[in-house]
Structure formats: structure tokens, C-alpha cells
Amino acid sequence: MAVAAAIAVGTVVALVLLWPTERPDSRLAGFSAETEQATVERIVQFRCSESPTEGCRRAAVRLNEGAEAGKTVALELETGGLAPKLERGDEVRVAKDVPPPGVPGGTLYSLADFERRAPMLWLALAFGLLVVVLGRLRGALSLLGLGVSLAVVLAFLIPAILGGRPPLAVAIVGATAIMLATILLAHGVNGKSLAAVLGTTASLLLTVALAVAFTQLTHLTGFATEEAVLLQSNDAGIPLEGLLVAGMVIAALGVLDDLTISQASTVMALHAARPEQAFGELYRRGIEVGRDHVTATVNTLVLAYVGASLPVLLVLTLGEVDTLEAINFEIIASEIVATLVGSIGLIAAVPVTTALAALLPARIGAGSPAPSHAH
Image 1 (cartoon, rainbow, N blue to C red):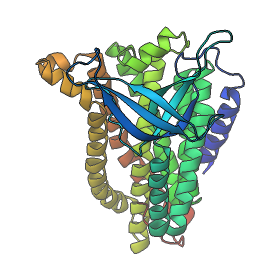
Image 2: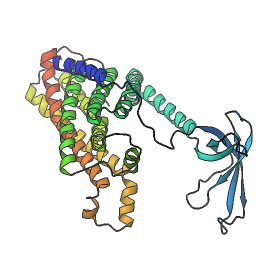
Image 3: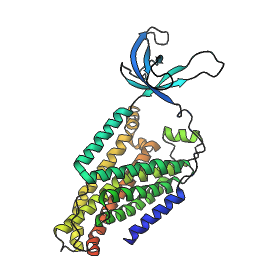
Image 4: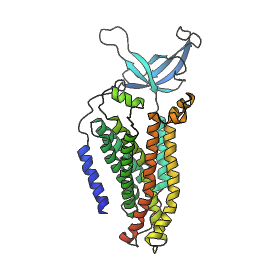
């Protein structure tokens, strides 16, 4: 219990020390344009010299917000295969281009993107409703933990990195804060949570050490993605190698805390069924279940990274790049290193959490209530 308390206190102190107090020094050009919601009323196709075979298209859209709300304006649409497939009734976002004072011409509008927030909101509400209906109070508390996690990411992790704090230190502190919030809110302060907190912390530190070591051994620079190049070209001042390692740590945490709480819950349930079991027997039975957890979660982690890299894999396949040559490309190598580092952390979490959970019944007393399962 003292170790867990020290972890919590240390996390709070580190949050205070690393908390961003200033705004970022630079901005990315092209991402700050304000847009307005509009509805497509009709699409008109006409002959044009730019696309003599397919013709050009123009959309009439009704502005739903802004100073000219209710007005219908025309949008010139791009031609070719990458042009958006607009239909009547689509909700879109349009960017407004106001000419400088003294320059003739009225306000021009251009298509910025589709309006996606309403469907995403309904999807999020459906998700929250299902969690509460099936999980009841535990489900509601898990949603609260999810809210805290997002708050840590948006209010601390991202601003701190943009504010010049070391990305790896910020990721460790942010991950620990998220871990404490999600586990304690969803499962309360008990032996199961204590074992999960200690097991997650130990495995997270192992993951950090492996991520740092193998990022250096494989000479990963963090320049493999367009986003990284964009950050560097806009002089954001962010160390991309540290950002790469920080991403590995945060990604591993997403599966790690689920595995540790499930493993701790399993061991506690085994003890509640037969309180007379000694440490060795309880550990052995818990590890048997842990092997199934490892198999499932490692597969989940690998498939998550494969899904994220699917477009790159398709490009390399179409380019007939040899497999051994392809895995040496940084954009692929970074995903492989992240997958293996996260998987080793997950595997290590099982025996560590199982041992801690098997030791706790003797420390907290045999009369503790039987824990509910964690999934």
C-alpha cells in the first residue's frame, strides 16, 4: 500500500512540475481557418475545359451559421478521382475567404470538409448507453475514468509536449495519472486495484526502458510520417524521437491496464472461492488464466498496429517491395518495434500482477469480500 501511495504522490508532484503554463510558441499554418456549417441544396454539372470528358461540378449550399446564415452560395468542386462525392442534403463545412479592404469582389466560399460531428455524437451516446446498461454503476464509473483520461491527454499531455516539456517524461507521468484514475474510479480502492496499479507501473517502466533502448538500437528518428515532417517544417521544436517513444508508451497502456485489472480480479476470485489456497497454488492457477489473457491481448495489440499501417502495407505490396526490405523502412520498423515492445510489457505484466495479487490476500486478510470480475 505504501508503494502505491508513493506512486500516486509522485504522479501528482510530477504533474505539477510538468504542467504547461505557457502557450506553444508556433502554430501550424493552414489548420486554423474558421469554417461554417452548410447544407448542400443541389449539384450542377456543366462542360468545362478543365475536365472535357467528365465535365465540372458546382454545388449550391445553404449557410446554416455565421453572419450570412440562410444565404445560398456557390461552391466550385474539384474534378478527378479525389473530388468529394457530394449529394443533395449532405452537411458540409465551408471556409470563408473575405477579400481585403479596397479589393473588389464579395465573400467567396470553398468546401473545407464534411460535417461529421453529429454522427460521431450519436455513436458516442450509443456507446455510453451500452456501457451503462451492461456495466451499471461500474460502467458509469468507467466512463468517468475515460473522461479523466481524455482530460489528461487534452489538458496536460498535448499542451505539455507543445510547451517544450520532454515528451517521454510527459508520457510517463500522463500514463501513470490515467492508470490511477481509470483503475481506482472503475474498481475502487481494494486489493484488486492495488495489485493492478503495482503490476501496471512495473510493466510500464519495463515498456519505457525497452522503447528507449530499441528506438536507439534501430536508429528510429520519428521522421517517417507526414505529421512528423509537418511538425518539424513548422519549427514546432518537438524532439520527434522522444515523441515516437512517448506514443509507444501511451499505446501500450491502453491494453496494459485492462490486462492487469483482469488478472488481479481473476486471482482474487480464485482466492475467494478457496481461501485456504497457499501462494504457490494461487499463483499457479492464476498464471493458467493469464496465458489466455496474454494470447488474446497480444493478438489485439498486433492487429491494432497492422490496422493503423494497412495503407502503407498496401503501397509496399503494390510496389513489389521485398518483405525483408520493407520491414527495414522506418515507417514499418517503428510499428514493429512498438508492437514488440508493447507485447513484451504485456507478457511481463501477467506474472508480476499475478504474484502481487496472490500475495495480497495474506496481507489484507482472508475476510475481504469476493471481487467482481474486471472485464
